[in-house]
Image (cartoon, rainbow, N blue to C red; front, side, top):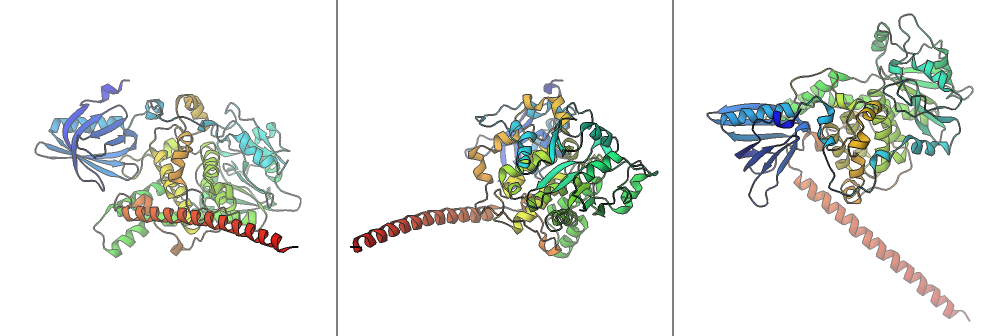
Length: 549
């Protein structure tokens, strides 16, 4: 298919653009295969370059021969185009609709994008499983790399290489895979070096109504326990939902078959409930006519902060099991690709200082989201404005980023990255020139040959010139466990995401720059103090030598 077939009118003059925080500007609107571009001949006017993949929905209005297109973006921005001529307006609108809903992944912009920067680091090879395993292998010999899933034959949503107990062979893993949803047998998510306990994740066990058991599964899970010790299974579904799953062939671990494990249910919502929550929240944030009562009731009705609280509470429980109880944990919901990954990731941010650095956080996303099989292509297909809802769309990753922001806000000096870093990840998960978030699993990314045909987001982000924008000036390495408060009054609306197009951040940006300047000036003064102290010490030493006979 040629893009030209979808572009009925490639160019229109005298189009007026209205967008947040900028004066209206008149210019020429151009449509390309991947971008909507508005360029003005006025000096000092910034051009608009909008990826079609960032467009969530469009509305059309007509007054006489003047047409208006309202473009609603996946990053929650709303843009208005006033187009002279009804035919041109209709053509532009139908072209945008067609280009923003392309079915084929290989027609998306990452396959056509060519970087304008020098690639210093190939992000596709920055966080390989073998490199991550080296961090653990120096501390323990009880785990090994398994290549049992090399051709994605055992589990289509796992990567080719996983970390499993040393005492469990590949044949046992194959048998366990038939007993776990989607073949997602228990694998290592995190090894806690201080307590020598682990977090594992998997899909639900396929016990069914007959209470089916799998001795290989019991052996695998028990291989992570020391003699006489206990572990916890955190099920991210309510007990009622878990019991209902048995009628469909799923279920949960029976106490009789897993006597050393205590099962705890921490219900975390999924799918359409989360999507509806996001839609309600964005609608409330965009309505400028609220009085205080109406705003607060709409915010509460969205349940967004309730979902944040549920996820953070489950993550704190897991961290508590590891750090305070010194007990290993297995986490799963149904598939093990959504709420499971939110909890394993956040538990690591609470427990592991490395996960709070820029590279450590990138490694976490690569390991616990991309390689672990979170279906980004499905979950991030639409955002808060789209009219046609599919059942698999849900802001799972955005909720995770929001939880990270809540912790960052409570511990502003413990993270090497800042809020801009989290916002950037949200934007690229929904629409990007990079191939990192394309596809639903490693298996799909291999078939699409993303490493050969697209650029990794990490190649771009990890340039020194870019990192400065995403580095937290307040960062001081903190090797302690950080315990976030999940009390309702401690959780706030993330204004940087949900209100950034509704009110200007100009004064906040100026305050942030001033803070950075003060910190830099303080460093300079500290350096001068250190030099003066050295000089003073040298002078005192000289005096002592002169005074001694």
